[in-house]
Length: 274
Image (cartoon, rainbow, N blue to C red; front, side, top):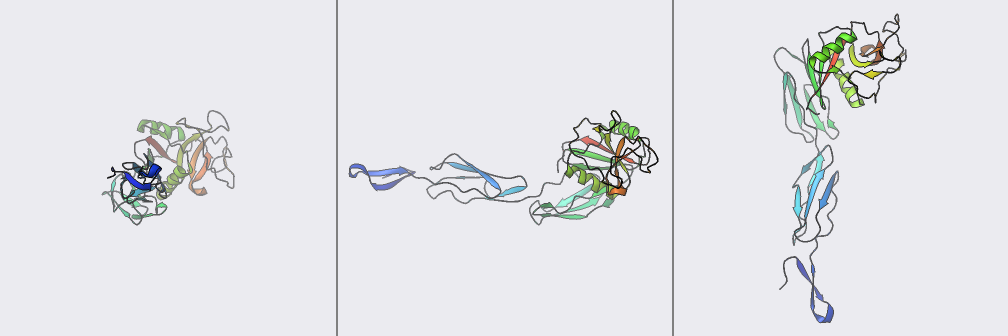
């Protein structure tokens, strides 16, 4: 009679029965995921987790028994959850491949962008749309809330003061991903848009009003190549403030800070993520 977790290995020393502890063996790694285990003997456990962008299908853990490890889960592509949709509603069927999200806007707001998007192997097929109405259109991306002040036509300094009053700054742009999203929304609404970058303090040294480090740029390569310290018309110099310019596919250009043509993109930090 052998105790649980032990198996007979036949005759060992001096013709006596020999028992060794049963082992489940190494558990295979799961594609796009990780396995952590406490051992390979009876009662040991293995826990599973998936890489970013993937969700676990199956049990989160399994235990070594006399029958082995049991069934292993798999990691499947999972689209990120869609954050709060300001001034509208979103109905989604899930976050796995093939799931859809359908958007609608509250009365008085106009939907701009795709009415529905689909979860693909590379994430959502498109950015979520926006619900548009002046004077403000509010959108969320990652940890930030952005207010597109479509009813405002302020100088750069006035726009920054307005954003301060809103509880933020003219937006700083730190990554290509963030830049592409803001260009997408700006294009939906149209117009010129102030961002929080300038070289007012020191000529040629561009700084964000939020004090963020300047780690990413999207200057237009023209012609004329930016920044060139000239206004959009080319008639004035001392162009110290930066905007998203529709004439250059919403890439960055510098302009005189007293121009009142651009509108403001204010950035307010929040807990939302996308």
